[in-house]
Amino acid sequence: MDFLLDWKSMGSLFATIMFFRTIVRDFIPTEVIQALKRFFSYFFTYLQPKMVTILIEEFDITYNNELFDSVQCYLSSKCFSSAQVLKLSKPKDSKNLTFTMDTDQTFEDSFHGSKLNWSFHIVEKKTSNLGYSNSNENRYFQLTFHTRYREMVHSSYFPHIMKEAEIITFKNRERKLYSNRSLGENGRLWSSVPFTHPSTFDTVAMDPFLKNEIKDDLMKFVNRRDFYTRVGRAWKRGYLLYGPPGTGKTSLIASIANFLEFDIYDLELTAVSSNSQLRKLLISTTSKSVIVVEDIDCSLDLSNRNKKKEMNPDDVEKMNINKFMNPGHSSFASTVSLSGVLNFVDGLWSSCGGERLIIFTTNHKEKLDAALLRSGRMDKHINLSFCDIESFKILARNYLEIEEHEIMKEVEEMLGLVKMTPADVAEVFMSCEEDADMGMKNVVEEMKKRLGSMTEEKEEMKKHVEEDLIIEENFEKEEEKMDRAS
Ligand SMILES: Nc1ncnc2c1ncn2[C@@H]1O[C@H](COP(=O)(O)OP(=O)(O)OP(=O)(O)O)[C@@H](O)[C@H]1O
Image 1: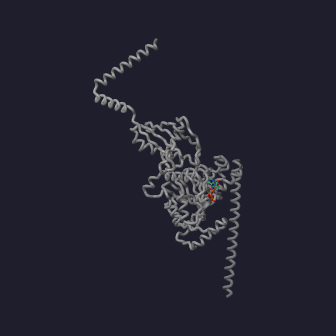
Image 2: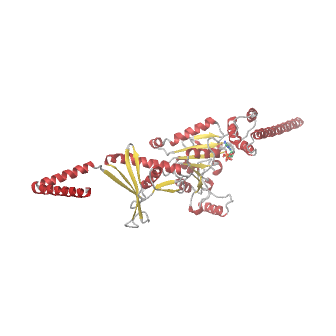
Image 3: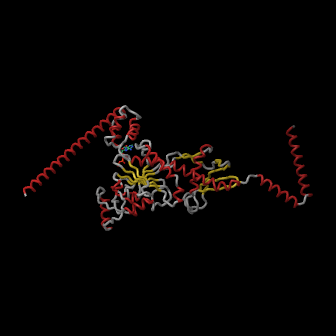
């Protein structure tokens, strides 16, 4: 019954509509109907939110779209919380797993209170081989947002995405240790392995004040990009680490690279044949890198800037061929000059604005040319010296896991009498297999042994001096006798 009633009311409704439609058609002029239609269409369109859509394709006609990569990186760090289907991967050179959105997935981002909708799509390409990519697919991100956010998206949101992506990429990458020791192999100038040296500012044994000073200096350096641009200087800083062997120069370099999360370029100057090759190597360095030249005094004859190479190019060529045929041979002729090295230190050849820290190490600072040492080239001279009690305590903490010990006072007194490098102390501790008492006892014994041999050496020297004096006296007496006789 209800069913029948329903059908009846439907029929009467339909009849009423038809009746009104006829009245409207017959009695209202067409112009008024058109105007009403326009009004309603405008009214409903106005009520709907006005949206803007931006498409970010992976490849433009001729180039790889970097913004696509930035968006991908940015969204992969965000979409885990809300997207329903995600792809998981581990990119090369990255230490972290990466999530990416799957096809046709959507993600809502919010930025400064505005809602922004992202989706990811793949479509088949209609034309092929025109663009940068050889792939048959066109991958793109679609961003949809209200038109009132147009300006904000352009001026703030995209720059924010690019900055975030840069930070994420930087944090995710595996840092590299680059070395030019395999120069020439595989046609590459640098070979690289992930950088995993464990030395940090906590483990390196040195004066705590100096340590903090270095950290502050490094932080100031990396945060002063605008300053370097303003004053028109290359964004680089030069450190000279000097001191006896085994005092931690290499360990400090590793700590600095770990602290800044920079790559390390280990530049072997003796394997670089010319200034132009040095320039090529430098241009190939990436930003955020530490370029290290160890034992600069042994690398090249850098003591005199004006010294001219007298060898003619044919001799140089012959010697270099000889070196490659016989790697142990010492006659490899490098034409890298001091002025070439100074250009390198001055940042003249650095191709882009990224920050670079140049570190030279030497055991003999006095051998280096003053031009190399002046500030602006070597901005900071860091002296790493023999162990004092502060450095010793850091080593004891690292190797033996102790802060204090009953014979620490004796160690302090002994350190005032004998010279022990941190490497010497570390060596003794290494052999004690973390037995703190044995480590401390052995180190004191080692110091006493050294003190003993120092005393013996002194005695020996004293004896020699006394003998020389006696010989001299005898000689003078003989001369006097001969004078008197004549
Ligand atoms: N200051 C230090 N702090 C911690 N460990 C150190 C320190 N100095 C030396 N060592 C230990 O001694 C070893 C050799 O030190 P390192 O190579 O850093 O010295 P270096 O001054 O660079 O020597 P060289 O001038 O011979 O190259 C390191 O592996 C480290 O274990």
